Image 1 (cartoon, rainbow, N blue to C red):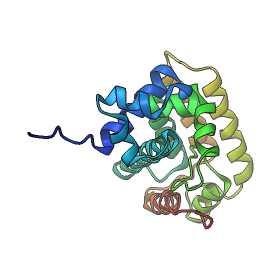
Image 2 (spheres, rainbow, N blue to C red):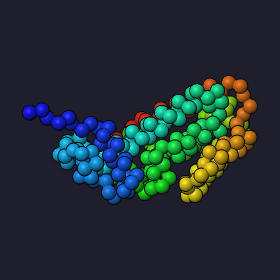
Image 3 (spheres, rainbow, N blue to C red):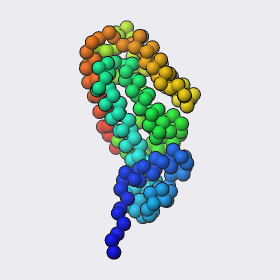
Image 4 (cartoon, helix red, strand yellow):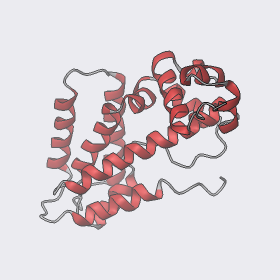
Amino acid sequence: MTQPPVTDVTAILDAAGDIIMNDGYAAVTLASIASRCGTTLDEVAEMFPTANDAMVAMLNREFQGMYGLIVQNIDRDPRGGLLSRMYTYILSAVYERPLAKTLFVIDREALNSIMRNSHSFAYTPTIGIRGELIEALQAAGMVRDDVDARTVSSVLSACSAGLALTAPHDDLGIIIEGLATLLSRGVDTDVVDTSPGKAVFFDWATKLTVPREDD
């Protein structure tokens, strides 16, 4: 007798994400994942001993996908090495991906819960523009020398938080474009070649995938 195909990891992670988006973090159990996949509890448990193991893997995959999209957009944009363009693509990656939007905007407690219950997280789940990234862009000639990197980082964090608190937005594209325009006028340098800034971002994004020392 032919055995049914074993549910793959992708199906399990898709199911976990679907449950979080539609039913909430508390509804994600091995049993609910198995039901959503149309498979057995034992089959899911063989791959992920706990529901949180599945959610950590799901979050790793989503975060990796987000930054993969951001890097692609930056790479193909002639102005992609400027801070204003990076911020545009980071916000777009969050708000245009349903699971990312749920975790980073709608239900941040779910994101926090997954991280608190994880002892080994392969990615640093951040969508903020940190001061060290801005300083590196300054050194590469992409950000004006008279700009205080830490101040800009704090302002962008406040803008991102406000955007999240007031979501959803029917005119999200206009809002993101407006924020990017303000950054462009107040922070970006007037350069032709932005490839040094792209190199800085690629290096920064790559370091986010390096496991922490205590992992």
